[in-house]
Length: 121
Image (tube, rainbow, N blue to C red; front, side, top):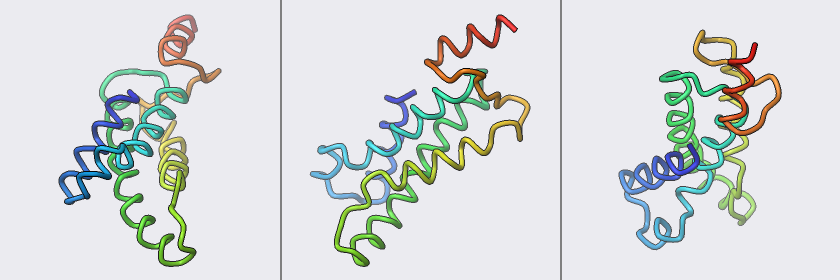
């Protein structure tokens, strides 16, 4: 999930015309990768709803990054760091239980452990 999240961020950055050096440095893939990782830790991987949340969360993280990159830089002359990840991952977490396919892990761990624990119920 983390690699897919990074790829979503990289492709999204390329689509919006991000600087090639920023793309190579991984700036556009870092926050989306963290969001996809958070989804994989806090949810049981149960098919398409899980994948849609991981990929959609990564894409939303990129959009938040675009807005925060400019806003934070102009307001306090500093990079936005992981604020886009924090906002998007929190929103993804709040999606749990609102859709039948999005099940919170009882004891968050790796996706494999989450799935084993879910199947053992």
